[in-house]
Structure formats: structure tokens, C-alpha cells
Length: 388
Image (cartoon, rainbow, N blue to C red):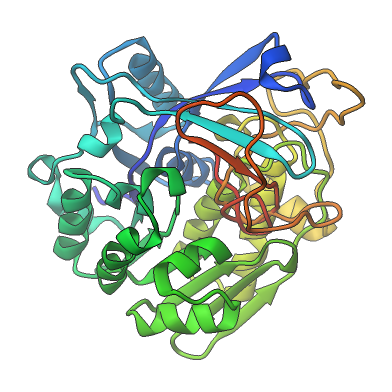
């Protein structure tokens, strides 16, 4: 049986404050959630009815057990999620300062298990047969994951739809120049590239959205999706078709995770062979819905919720299913959701996109501060990525 979607890359445990507007030193309670961009995209597509699986690795520890249980609960096949003895399952903390500041603190030392994916352990036939295969930039940052990612792409040989989520995380690389050759190689084997302005600049050296889209097409992809934050999302196809969709108004609670919701909905639209504008509007709406909630994986919307948002032209804040809305902290709003530093999500009004805010809070390994946007990678219409 071929999967609708197989993703490959990052997974971890998100520990998010249940209080908004409160710095980590003063936070008194946290929620535990499945995190990691590759895992979250698989969850997002599964929520939309797709048959999905993820290729990744965890620690051989209780958090690793939790991630297996969470994936199965969300309907994601975990057969290719394997433990790495001696390495702990990564955890990520964030701070929630709506509407546009969600600092992230990654704990992936001494090395994240998901960077130990080995090419010799891949089910290359399943990867080739999947209708959509999704890889991330983080998977290129270290060996053996780098070789495994490129081997999977080469074996797939652009069969079906192959998506490269540019997923630029500066703390995982020495500098953009180190990443660029590996990004170029991955682009040769992919049909769709997705990224925010920072990410497309790393991949191509170009930041202006239309020029960056053209550079991605010149690098070999068929479809370039550029998340522009408050300007919305730009999609350009090699056949000349293009769509530029504005952000969907939403009161942002947590921009992290919006990009992953965008990605899952993008996959859903591509599998449905929708036109570009319809696909982008639904993806923007999915990202915006998650930006209005505290969690990421457990906040991924259903098809009905996405359709309602597209029809209404805005997202109404409401409590996430099965969870109690966090109590307002220091006058903060109470919408639910989960941030994602790689999603381009719309905000109400649209929050700034791209360009991370200055780090805040206590120093921590792998700290990253992202501004919240609605609709994609770093929080912004079409961007937001929690993790992750």
C-alpha cells in the first residue's frame, strides 16, 4: 500500500507554557505535545484524511515512548521511527508572547536522534512509491542524516510530488554558506520547494519573493512556494501559473506550528490537484487556525474547520478540542494554538513575517526566537514552525 505522504526529519517533545505573556522563569505549568516539523506535517495531513508515515528517530527513553503513542493516536504510521541508544529524545521549550514573539529553546545535545537516520536503514521502495515525499533542511545539517536525505531523494528520482521544506534553523549550521551547497543538491531532486523569506535567501542567495521563486525554479523545482509573512504567500509554477494570496485575519495566540499546518494542507491540496490559488488559500487558513491555538500537533485542523475559515475569510478564536483554554496571563488573550517557526500564517492584523526577533528569556542550548505570523514557516502567513 502506497502512502499519501511520507515525511522525513525532525521529531521531539514540545513543552509549552500553559500561561501566555509569562517569561519562562515565572511559568508554573507546561503542556507536553508531539513536536518536530516532519512529524507535525504528517499529523496535519492525517487530520485532513491522508494516509501518512514519518521517518525519524528518538531516544530510547520515556519521551521516545510518548512520541510513538502520540503518532499512533494522530493516525500517523510510526513503523520507521526507531530508537537511538545513548541519545535523549529532544525537548523544546517556548515562551508565548502574542501576537508576534515566540522564542524557542531547543535541547538537542549532545546530538538529536533524528540526525542519526542512516541511508542503509531506509525503505527506499516505500519512499519511491509514496504519492508525496517530504524532507526538511534540518535533515541536511549533519551526518548521517544528510547522506540519508540525499540518498532518499536520489532514489525517488522526482517520482510523484517531492517536497523540500527549506526549514532553515541557524543554530543547526555554522552559517548559510555551509548549508547552501546541500540545499542546491536537494533542490535538484525535488519538485516543490517551500520556505519563508529567510529560508529562500539561504537556498538561493535571493530575498525578493518573485526573484527567489524564479531562482528556485531555475534550481530545478516545478513549484516554488514563498511565504511572505504579512504579505501572504506567493506560489509560482514552472508552467507559468501563479497565485499570491493575502494572509487570513486571525488573533494569534502562538505562531509556532502554523507552518506545519500550512505544509499538511499544501500536501492535501496537491493530492487533490486543486488550482494554485485554492491550494494556497486552504493552506493559509490551516496555518492561521493553528496560530490561534496554543498547541501544534494537537491543534491541527480538520477539513471542515479549514473550509469554515476559508468561507468566513477569518479565523474565530475558540478552544482547541479536548483542551481547556489557558487562563489569560497579564492581560493576554486566551485563544488556543501552537507556534511554528516555519509557517506563514495570517494575523489580525497580519503580524510581521520573516526576520526573527531578538532572543529573549534565559539562555538555553539551541535558543531561537521567532516572530509569529500566519500562513507558513516562521510564524507568518504561510509560515510558522514549532519544534521543534
